[in-house]
Length: 397
Image 1 (cartoon, rainbow, N blue to C red):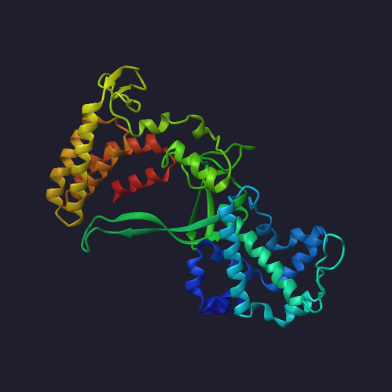
Image 2: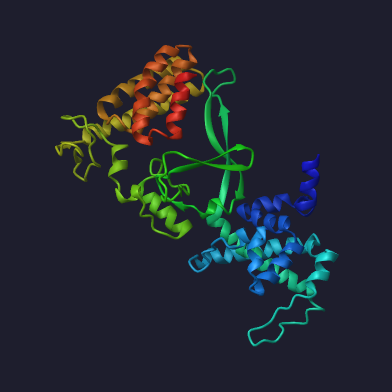
């Protein structure tokens, strides 16, 4: 009850009855929440200190959010128009719910002077104290929307689900349940192969943990989403440029596309190494021994095995695990002949076969399939990765 009471006094009294509208504006909902939680009185005092160049401005908790980058000079015109209209909509909502009608705030803002470039007052503050407050708040709403595009953090939770109601196979996945802004965490720069990981073991509290040893003086690097093991080099570059306005030159990006080619590669007939992407003639060279080989027949087989894999998954979802195993085992054996040992398609087939074995109670066979997959996961994602932890948990379960 105390939590509900505090939420009501801070922000929910203004949001209640308007949640459908606020949900429709997506992440911009958090912009209006920042204003509500900070409060008009605090915004007034902060504005006065900021305008006066007061060194005490850093003592305001709100300043940590205010100082986050907006990238307004780099945003596309279409996006800026959308953000501006959204800020105007939220401003009108605050006005409609009489958020600006607080007597205490109005009396304090009556002393606020908005001075023009020529030194003259923009309007009579006594008569227009409410207008001055609205102008300030409207500008802050737009600023926060711009900031949230590249500073918002997803709060995630691990959720479990089964294919069938009585299924013994439980699948866990990380899902977004909320969005928040953490000014301290926003100070970390990006790397596609980060040295920390963020999670939420205590509700909305963000905990940052190192995933490997970080030397004294070494930069602490976060991943903004595009991870080098989960997104291709070109996709990472495009995403980071479009949302965060920079070209990533981290260590992972420095190696270009060769690392990800190994995760999609056919197997070399001579050394079992990975082949690079086939050219227009259907030929590919081994990344390890350099031998060039014909790949057209392998590509055709790979397409047929994809269809077989999809059939197996559909049968498993319907509870027909024995029939699913027939198709999935055939798919797995063919992929083992065609594909490099760290090919992600090979790993997905092994994972699905193991799930079906577990579903029929044959856990020994499931472990035999997963054991070699653990070594591949360790090689692909690293010794300290969450993917390896998940794979080891499968084995222990």
